[in-house]
Amino acid sequence: MIDRQVFEQEIAILMDWFNRDFEPKTLKRLHQRLSAHLSTKQFVQAALIVFDESHFFPTVEEFVSAVKGDAETLALQEWDLCVKAAARTDKGMLSGLSSQGQSALHLVGGLHKLGMATEDDLRWLKKEFVAMCKSTPADEKSLPQSRASEYEQLDVVRSLSGKLSFNGKGR
Image (cartoon, rainbow, N blue to C red; front, side, top):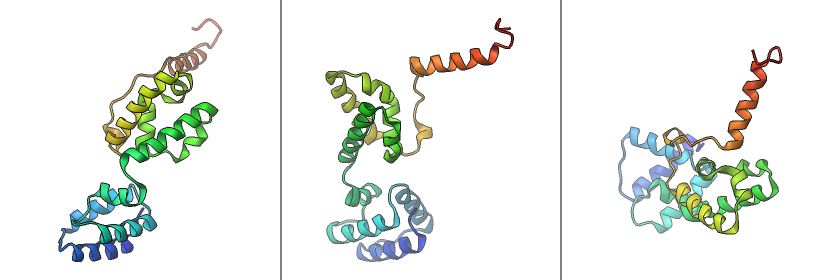
């Protein structure tokens, strides 16, 4: 979350530099969208970069790209993290994954599928993952629901059968 006072200071400088005026509701939206992607320190760094390099007032994507790189580079970094986590079967490695990366991983089949994939399958999964990361909105509520994997379905069945077996006869 970007500190509100720092945000207002830096945005005021950029609005002056680019000769732009925004309504308070627009500034509130800009703060919300940037806070979803950047820390206060990253925002200040991005503001300095766009001040030096941009010809027009930057979009949210341009602010983020200024300090983190473009969406494809970020997606490829997250893919590498997912492949390493799958090879080590360590879900803990995914703690740094963005919400877009988490959604894309889920939609391509999860760690289990990555761990079981052939090299050829991994190339296709990588392509799908990167495309999804680049296009997935940060708000996961808008994502379509994917089907549960065979293993997830088995876990649900085992869990339910254990709860339903009071007397050993399932009744």
